[in-house]
Amino acid sequence: MGKTNSQVDIKKILVANRGEIAVRIMRSCREMGIETVAVYSDADRSSLHVRYANEAYHIGPSASSESYLRMDKILEVARISGADAIHPGYGFLSENSTFARKCNEAGIIFIGPSPESIEAMGDKISARKRMIAAGVPVVPGTTEKIVDEKEAVKVILGIGLPVMIKASAGGGGKGMRLVRREEDIRGAIRGAKSEAKTAFGDDSLYIEKYIESPHHIEFQVLADRYGDAVHLFERECSVQRRHQKVVEETPSPIMTPEVREKMGACAVAATKAANYEGAGTIEFIVDDQLNFYFLEMNTRLQVEHPITERVVGVDLVREQIRVAEGHPLPFRQKDLKMNGHSMECRIYAEDTDNNFMPNPGKITHITEPMGLGVRCDGYIHEGYTIPIYYDPMISKLIIWGRTRVEVIDRMRRALHEYKISGVKTSIKYLVKIMETPDFRNGTYNTHFIEKNEEFLKSKYKCDTHCEDISLIAAFMEHSTRLKQAKAVIPNDRVVGIKGWKHRGRRAGMQRM
Image (cartoon, one colour):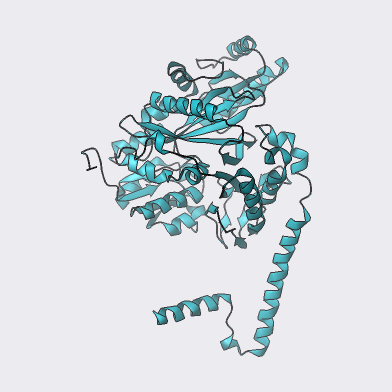
């Protein structure tokens, strides 16, 4: 197919983000022959995304409000560097319609949906109305924003408890309260309004019926500017703590082919109703009888997108870029198939024994797992100091296998191999999740962590400790041998690990 007048060739992309997602985007760009531009704050001077990019520009102090959220600075870097396009990743400015509009006004391609689509689906009330018009089932609830407390109380009593109070402009669990008892209604309303105002600058709410024993299932979608849209099947995201996802997998262990087909069709209908372009996610809430309801649309790339890539065989970042260049989708729904099973664990620098408090600090050692079906998306390295200013997620461990059982066993093995020293991480907590009966048999929902809290906080099995002890013992033995070598070999002939690497490189260059 020849190039149309609406197609362009993107030569250089500014990645308006940091950490693992910035590196992940740059990898696809490098494969496509596209140059990349990194932006970084004071805290991220030595971050991997800065080293990986073709160019890197400092944009301000460590606080995100003075760096990664400064539209003017990012657009100025795009102008100076000659970037054709900006990829926002997720978080920060990824779902900011004002930023998308400013990019367009500056003649820079925003790799994502239109500002109008972001606004339509970012507002929960607007999104609900569109879904109802498109025939997509929604949870019973309000269709107008609520600001007045008395009105909110009246609506809640009319719907009937339990209900979920949510910020109309919100997401990520902020401005959200579950109410089961009438005496808790007013406190929950005030708490939700205050949190929503702080997080989003908008304290308006919407209220919906709470689904008992819910499953959080989302469908990955892709759409081009010519009206074509497809889904790339579902992801099960019900292992959550404080409304934040911890483990995701695809396919969902509760899904049937019939329900998958219905939900997929609704996801595509929702995408078209939003006049959407690019990669996005339609989130559903599903009850034990597999009745499903639209929850929200994320108008960006998701953290857990790699498991879809692994099972479907599609590079989602590559497709985002091609859609932004004006290319039509290269496949139809019938062309997309699922192959095997995939799962992602989010690795956080946090103290799981101390209420999951973030645990920033300097990385003194890291050994990433390897082997068949193992992928690590991260950005830390030995000597790197994890800053206190950003989300404590430091990497994602993605596993593929032929079956779900194979994936769980492989994930458990990979987590045992994953060694990070210098800071506390959630790795051993994730091992416990893999060992929990409810998770292994696939009978879990969004109450999983709450239900299994005692088991998840119990002592870890001996083999985990033994591996840690073995690692320490091996390091001590290595140090002892180096000391012995220094005692019998003149100093000018001692070759440590770093010296061995350098000499090996020189020798290799001489042989070429």
